[in-house]
Image 1 (tube, protein in one colour):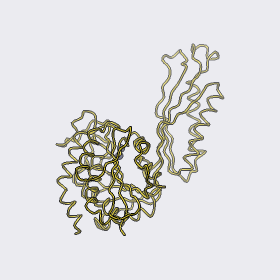
Image 2 (tube, rainbow, N blue to C red; image 1 turned 120 degrees about the horizontal axis):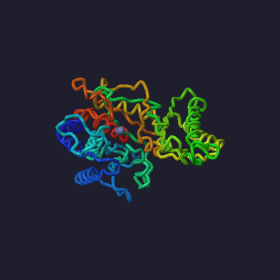
Image 3 (cartoon, rainbow, N blue to C red; image 1 turned 90 degrees about the horizontal axis):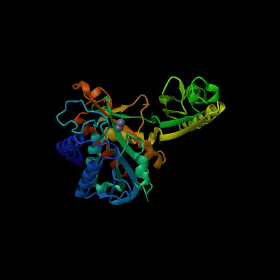
Image 4 (cartoon, rainbow, N blue to C red; image 1 turned 30 degrees about the horizontal axis):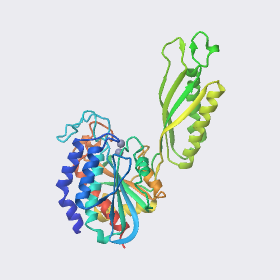
Length: 396
Ligand SMILES: [Zn+2]
Ligand SMILES: [Zn+2]
């Protein structure tokens, strides 16, 4: 076994300790102050340069310069937790009421931290540099944009980005990789339909936004069914609607919220435009005013085939052939990892690290599930792949 792998194994207990520490004090998006402080302190102690992110309190950007010149590779993980009351019964369970690492980001953070430590010790093998991104606020879909705005990639043009996500539906020890469409885009909308309220007995003196919103919801069904090419999966859901106070009063306004997921960027753009047009035209045809605002907009993850092959090789080299699993289908779930990919001209892959241990049934429930257990031993498989990929990518 190569020296660095032995060394990573040797740090296993320390990794578990770090993971338990993070797991016990989870922090919500943009509130990851303690996690950020801990990461900055640890990285600095080890001699890794932490960069300034003016105006952003959470999230960490750091750099490991290789001994030789060359391109920059980004390794990115996320550090935030979810507003879910943990119900795992684990000894190291969350001590924060109503907040937990139910998406496994504590494993992500720990694995990247120790991958960084390993790479720091192997600078002589690196032709180029490794940018470490410990991203804040993934769960609300805006952390990646905020870190970019704060200058996380300022004055550099990274060539590729790699990271991983824990996968409770994949067996522990397996690393899932895909080429091409992997995760859906995610757009969240708020609609405001403004009419003219009045007495329910005299609708002709009003503009009824309840009727208009009902009409709008039915017309929005044509966005996917009539404007999206059926060869590309997409889904649009209106999941919230609010308006009115009494059965005999026509309100002034109705608000609705909904979300869309898609894979193909051009189809997504076409549907985004169509949502705007339908909103305006449907509402104005009935005398109301329709407005739609996009609250979140995350692109899809289309895994770069070349990088995917590189990750697959890294899995085989660092863990062994039997650990590689080509994922048969994409996921409708989203991750703003895609925003970093966009910044790297699409050259990136977010692989899956299996966390389902058949001996522990609760490890296979799924992400964002209060009872789901992410086993510590996932740490044995995550960091080696990150390190091996970086060594291969920035090797001579
Ligand atoms: Zn999540
Ligand atoms: Zn996640």
